[in-house]
Length: 100
View 1: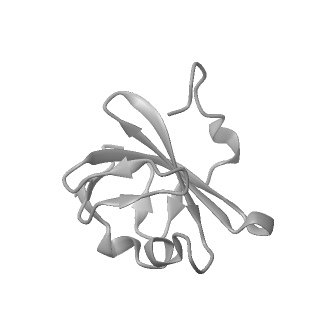
View 2: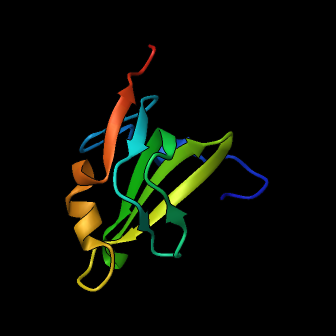
């Protein structure tokens, strides 16, 4: 969870692979992110945006979850969360489209 302050959305990409800002997604398969934050099957999150830091192989996916902003951190390296990052559609499904 991001404490106290909201996300500076100016640097975020609004679309990333299966994700579109403002759309809601359900977790299909439970997983833990880089910080060992657990996401359970059935959790619903609304996508805010993403950021990728190539020198760290760090993918950050930002969501709203139960009224709080969350950063799902994935390390796109062998032995970490590369399988999740490369197979997002196996972990998330869209449940609501962007109301724009």
